[in-house]
Length: 112
Length: 113
Image (cartoon, rainbow over all chains, first blue to last red; front, top):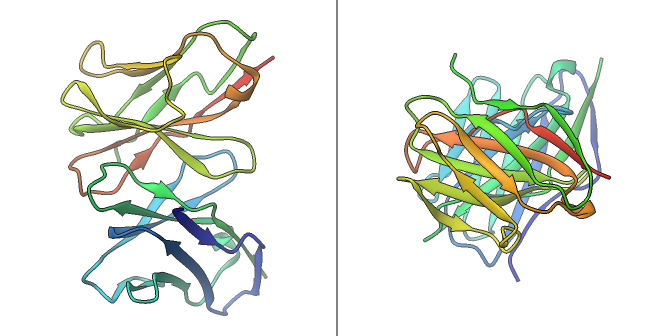
């Protein structure tokens, strides 16, 4: 069966450290993978997109890697701040489909 | 920055009643979606809509659900006869092209009693 797995346990880190979140998938052939941020009671907000032929993408303090052999994407936030505290969702577009499928998200808590 | 707007923010209805959730996507976007999120669970795809027709739907989107773009700006989701398990946050999303990121509204919280 198809699965997108993100750590269900919350990730707690100290301000200034790098947060690393994991997204693993099974039985998908993603054309691309995206990361979103979701705050309580709000809709997801797009952060980064990485395509199947790309290894790494960066945007300011954010970095995403994509390993299609391991079927895994890593999402990094460097120099984390308490304002980065939120749930982070990975989502992928399976080849031949038109809609994104989301993982269940990982909650990040950055302590001051 | 343009945004997707959804109304109402919270809807309470009795089991068996019909509800219509409304969305105004970003004006130059061509692809429209409904997702739902049951409390504490993941965001689940319901339906996508392009060129005035449904382009894809999930198993959740059964005969009780329908979508419409009645006037070129609104995009609605109708649930004909609500069930308790329809209680969830419903998100509308749109995007400019098939490849661009999704822009989500802030959702309608539907509570079925």
